[in-house]
Every structure is written in structure tokens, then in C-alpha cells.
Amino acid sequence: METLDLERIRDGFPGITPAFGEMLLEACLVCLEKQGHESGTVLHVYGDWNVDVELRRVAVSPDSFSPLVNRRKCGMIQDLKLWSVGTLPAC
Image (tube, rainbow, N blue to C red; front, top):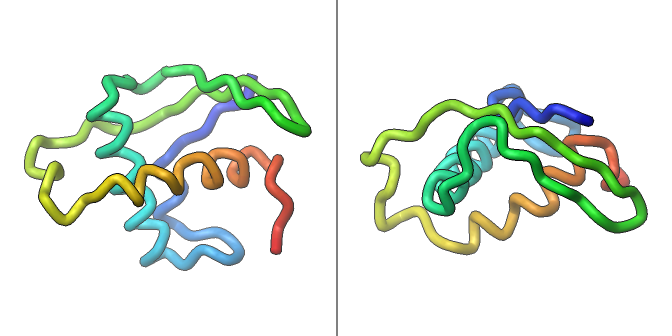
């Protein structure tokens, strides 16, 4: 099983600057918190590659649930988790 430490996103990756990574991390954490997914939640990813991914994340304070955080950011999680485990081709 793969492990995805969401904190790594804030360091940036090829094609993702640290500033954008920070925004993605916040969006991921708020969305996961709202859906009740704790650290250690296992995601079952299906597609060209099938993989189980265990999420490692920090807790989110209620202050993070601002009106500026919207549902569109949560849609990025799908691409992000596929890319992070190396199953999404690089551009």
C-alpha cells in the first residue's frame, strides 16, 4: 500500500510551486475534514493503475472553514492524489 503524506505538497513538485502546493494542501485538508476522513484513511484508486493509498494529514482547525474555501478546490484532490502516487502522467 502506498502512503501519501499531504504535508509534502507544500514543498512543491514539478509543475506545482510551493505557493500553489500550500493552497492545494489547505483545500485537501478542509475537504477531507468536512467529509470526516481522518489521517490514516485509505483511498482506493481505480483506473489504468489500481492502488490503495493511505492518507497522512494534520488536523484542521475550525478557523479553516472560511467562506473563501469552495467546493471547486476539493475537485483538485482527484488529480492530486493520482499525481502524487505517480499514476498521473506528467505534462
